[in-house]
Length: 139
Image (cartoon, rainbow, N blue to C red; front, top):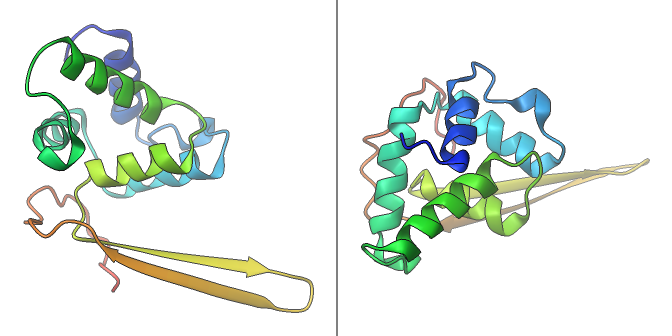
């Protein structure tokens, strides 16, 4: 990878066995890093995923030049931070190129709990080639 500061930070994170979960400041960042850890995302896999993300026309990233490089560096920087917004979290999920996203949220109150769920088809071109883990897909 290049020697850019954002590349160094994400590479260090991806080379870590824990993917830096212990340094997360927010829930979304922690969940993001747990996903990276559980899927065993390596720096080489990250490079392939990033290239695919940058080349996907849905992301409106130019095919060459300073703007493309800037977009890549900014995304690396955002995804390596110890805290992140929902928007950045979603970009990270889209970088992983899943076929579908299912989000379950359980709210626990004193007297009861409620679970809320949504599912969204996000990638109709999914081929699963980058699957590295042994976790079970849940529909």
